[in-house]
Image (cartoon, rainbow, N blue to C red; front, side, top):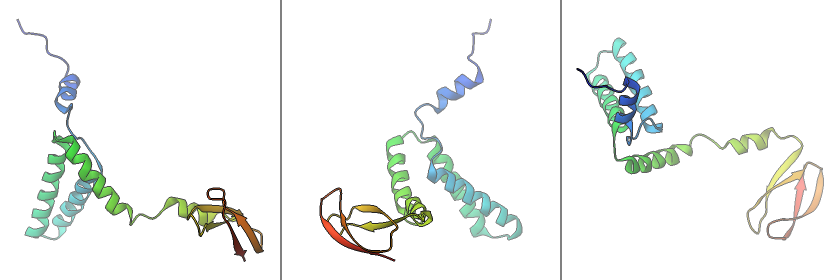
Length: 137
């Protein structure tokens, strides 16, 4: 009597196929709208409500968008811009390294890891084979 229908999971997967899905901008918009919604419970403001609704709507739009390439470019630009403020994890690892000193080659700007031995040393860069002096305190 009734035709066979695929399970809900398969129908949902078929619906979401070819769509953008969650990305960094989506996550930022959802979390920001959640914070604005919580603030809106304590502080009754039209601006807060409009921002919440706008961000939430934009996040849903991005999630279901079929223009995946454009959303990827936007997400890449967003991550590239805000990546400047996150700090460099390699730099943090260098500061934690107590056995080595990190210096740049003045000729090719290669980052060199040198043993922490006090005094003046002559260093040969492995990239450009240039020699330069380094003073380690």
